[in-house]
Length: 587
Image (cartoon, rainbow, N blue to C red; front, top):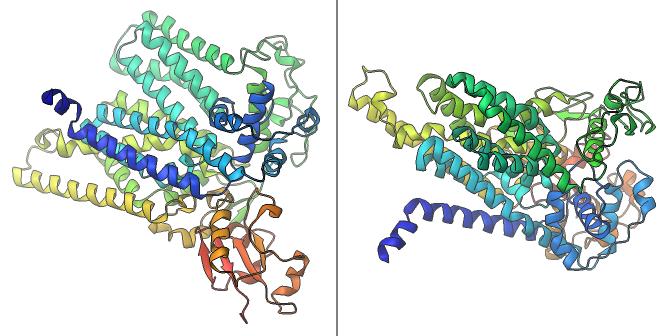
């Protein structure tokens, strides 16, 4: 019996359990500490709407699977829900206003509802950690798998979005899981693995529209990998690859209840210029009677996708066409920059991660590493997502759009670890290196690994649970984050609870003029607010009684320059690293 226990409780398995336990603890704590955010309210009301009505025509820019799971405890708690059909029909994106209304309908316990829904999403992050470990272990040995898992469990971005009920983290995990299933299918293309891969691809499509890129990518990867390997079994595997795509589309349709599937392409009402085909003002909502396919020869072709899925793609494209102003490195521009998300990755991920990524790239190019076909399966999905989001320069705003590439980055960044613990260095380095030189290389590698992991863990834990505002040391940390990015990259209203706690501990502070990006209506704030915010114009000129300010970094550095007079003042306190408190000069 003791031998069996020892086989189960191996050091590597215990390490996996320890890392995942720490990860769960950090997510659970963060989920309970932060306030409802603007990323969650739309998903919350849409999920409850789906359960109550059986319809999926709300918040169509994101598929329904993850919010349906997240709102199970909310529905069981019998949350108040007062949506009328006209609320859905009279607006292009009604989920925003309805999300704020949901908080008012449940004003007595809305914080608890959001905490429960966040906890319901934590298993997705655990699943992501397990897949990262398994895939990392296959490529880089047990040590590489543990390093990949460590990068996942303590990543500031994974912690930031893993403690929310937004779909970004869960969808990233589903895309990762689907990609891993493809790698297993390519190893052994059995019919069993064919159906598993197809089903998981369908679930990824139900998680986020972004993963539609996998539908064309998978057949291309299959052809390239088989060509590289010199295997001429295309004809034998072609029916299985086609089956994967068919199963994925069927799974997608099941998730939507086959609603609108088979609608003729020319009958769909689009709003985007891309699908509408007419020259419209991009700053206004065009009429919804446009369709670039209505007079074409494919107008009568039935779509194989649910109509809400197609309309979601159209609405998302419409958002990208708006040419909103974007902020980067102190500059506002419309449209934005093709390299916006590359830069965001550089400043929002830890210095330790990028050190490992650079070393992994060097070793992959010059010292050998996992087989090219194996690396291709890791790199391709991440690169495809990065290219797609970077091409939409009409809306450079949300770092969360590139969250799906992070697990692939973690796996790749750990590939060089096998050189330290698995492979014999004599096979990887020039033959003229003696054993002493090889030992120096190994020690240097271990030092780099330890330093990188220590930086990754400590810099993340230092800011937890406010990791949404994280910026690495090279970027100057959270205090200098506004010099690089703004918007949802820093604040989505997560600091309201922290501000309320700060006010309770400082009863003499206030009244406040507050602007903190929170979707919670101000009448529900437990913060002493001024009666009339029109006093703002004269408040800083000391023409009225002393007034305090609680301003988010976004509002302080916004384009409207409303609070420009505070920019060069030293804040009295920082709350949650995204909210600044300023006191009157005479107080």
